[in-house]
Length: 248
Figure 1 (cartoon, one colour):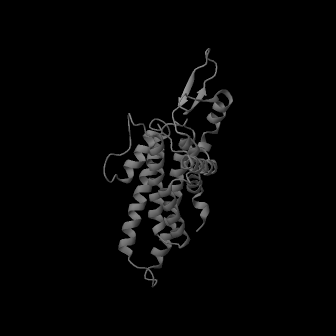
Figure 2 (cartoon, rainbow, N blue to C red):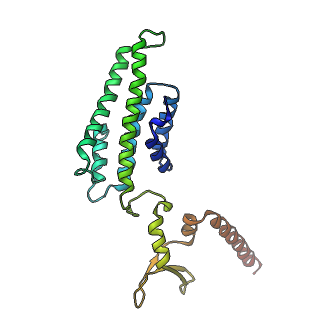
Figure 3 (cartoon, rainbow, N blue to C red):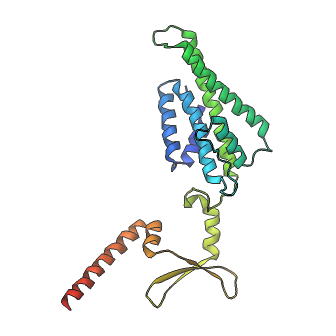
């Protein structure tokens, strides 16, 4: 067996290294794969389902959701929803549907095969044992093809920063445009409360968007080290203010 059987799955899981359920499923796949266990067949199918969940969560629109509404949706429902949310229903669809169908049938048939074959620890059926290795390979290759297809289709999409759970770094192209043309300015109101504004380009007078956030929240979201430094300075200022009150 070779880890080269699932490069697309590995690439997808590396891209989504901040998705805990996907990472746990990938760890299970690699563990069962390295132990030459038939359980990697089920893990490969679980990876496909998990990949669909991740993509749906990042692209599904609240106004017209495609996420399965059932309490425990079947495998096919997740894949079908991923195809719809990626808007692939009219392109490359027939061949992809056949691949999905065959992968689903394969994993189901392999489960029946294992149940009928029973234990193989004493060499009861060497043919079944050898056949199982080829089935593992077929299942992994099929799962890898499906995940690769979905991932490449996802990467072609223009992400919505409001809906996406992707980190800031994945929006480099749009980040660069904003940083080039937008500006920041701050001011204090008469009550001493700071206000931060984004100055939009090109308008006369220039339009502004106020960022309605507390200083603590801004620091917490952007720079945790700065948050700690500011906190220590503020604690010292608070202690000095209390001391002044006690003296007076």
